[in-house]
Image 1 (cartoon, one colour):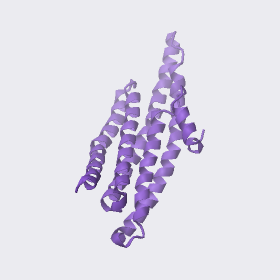
Image 2 (cartoon, rainbow, N blue to C red; image 1 turned 90 degrees about the horizontal axis):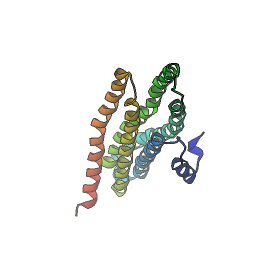
Image 3 (tube, rainbow, N blue to C red; image 1 turned 90 degrees about the vertical axis):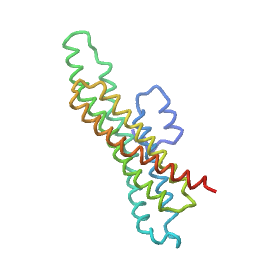
Image 4 (cartoon, helix red, strand yellow; image 1 turned 30 degrees about the vertical axis):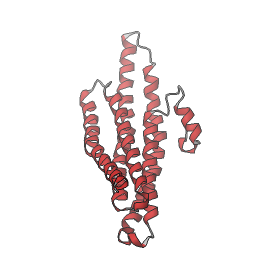
Length: 211
């Protein structure tokens, strides 16, 4: 299914249903797309204004990269659903006999690894989106600084949400070497970019609350 062609209501209704997809990974990708779009908007509102002529090229580059991120994140909603479906089916595989248990374990091993792929990619894109949000917040139009802060909030939510989708799968992995490799990747991105999101938010809040 091409989730990017659903209306907002259709997507929300499907997300809130009992269907396994879309789930937290898809919702994180959508939140990240919104965060990238907000940063994009700030850049658009900055370009062409004499006051911000010095950052014109920076904002134009931000626009190009943010637009690419938006498209990629929308595509990841469908990719996340496609990679989760085999795992969803694996959960319901029979495990009465030892043969059935062995077969299920083989399928689960690959399905769990596959299910980590998109959340990790969402996290990687959120790292870059947060760097763009910082540019928007610190160098973009002050008239839209609240939107740059909103961009950071959405991107942080997407980063942390995608991380949880990594960890729920690595927790079930019997191959702990592989599991810890994914965990290290996710932990590293959280350690670096959650503080960046908080820095952006604090900066924006200070600008909005100061006399």
